[in-house]
Image (tube, helix red, strand yellow):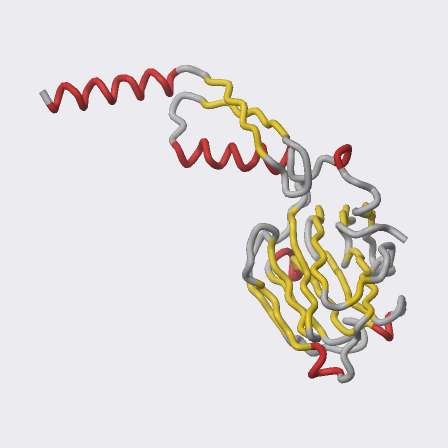
Length: 226
């Protein structure tokens, strides 16, 4: 009897996976209104495959729908790559400590984002590179990267950024401590006490973005443009 029940269950599952299913998934994006994404289940798909398809559809359709962006609370920036670094673009309004800045970036590798006391290379007090070494790591330096070689925080992880989809991150600045993490995760993968290192602590901060090396980058910073 038990064997018959198991066989019947297996037959039902086999039939379900042999039928192409159109599944509508309604998800609430990080910033906004309800968004729907479609996936197709094929014969042979297991739960892991379906889950991966679901998240891929979410990232493509819902993670960054520019038509839903509130321009008063976000700023879209394009940085051009090239033989030399693109100049930093300080396009958003300054932030006052403490703050958490959420942003998304789409690039092949080496997304550069800095914290500075003014809109100059000399005033940069935290230089962050996400996806450096051909998208193999993230690092932080205590000044403009061409002016100092010290790495005060390093995180080794391949594939942090992607040329075909926006990846979400955040920067937290509180009490002089700079933290960088992935969107949807509370734990930081980079952390450094800039206040203790530099003295005094910068309280008003300008944020600049750039492309490092050849690839261009598309950015959305969730703070108002200037």
